[in-house]
Length: 78
Image 1 (spheres, helix red, strand yellow):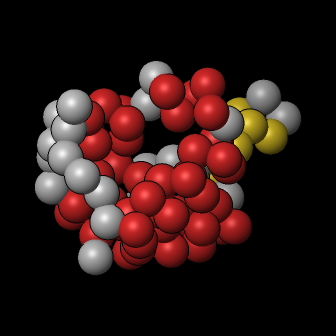
Image 2 (cartoon, rainbow, N blue to C red):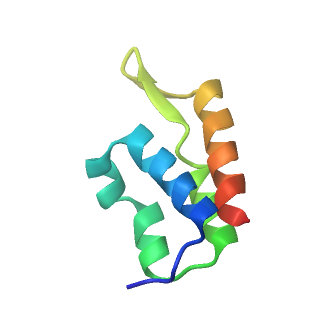
């Protein structure tokens, strides 16, 4: 299903999946978009949304995750 990924795209997705957890990745919009054959820019945009952590019971943006997701998104969009 989906389209073939480049080596760089595969590396980006492995990094993303390892970081969010394989179970979470399996049910993610990112995976669904890849399986649908969506273009690299669309998938990269979705990757960049995954930047929240829970602190004191609230979801907040993580600067570290923003940097990580930007790197993964740029790798995937190539």
